Length: 122
Image (cartoon, rainbow, N blue to C red; front, side, top):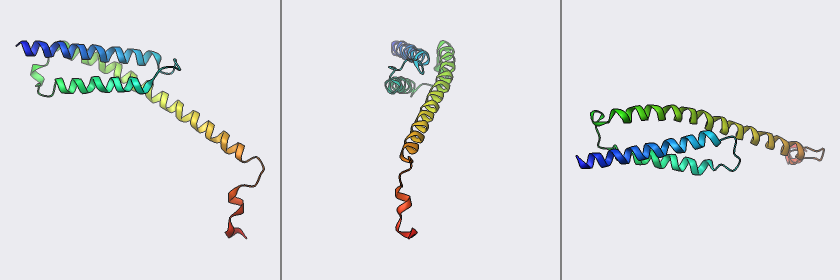
């Protein structure tokens, strides 16, 4: 019984830490240019790994109802996080496309390109 109580405390701590990470990321992504998305993602992954290790032998009947409610709450935050990360990645792709086009336009400044001097064209 004591081991189960210890595991419950550890699960609650990991869920709390995951929720704080999600709140921080959801608040700062796309707004704070100093935000380290890679580090935040590593922290989320670590929490999810810890949860899977803590629950690897647990049956669904043994899960506390409070964990189910907390997990549902976190799932909503994860869904919002997924949307924000997706929008952030799409914005990054758009910036890369703009920069790529700018470089290509700068290269096409009226000077002959390498493609215009292929040997097969003579």
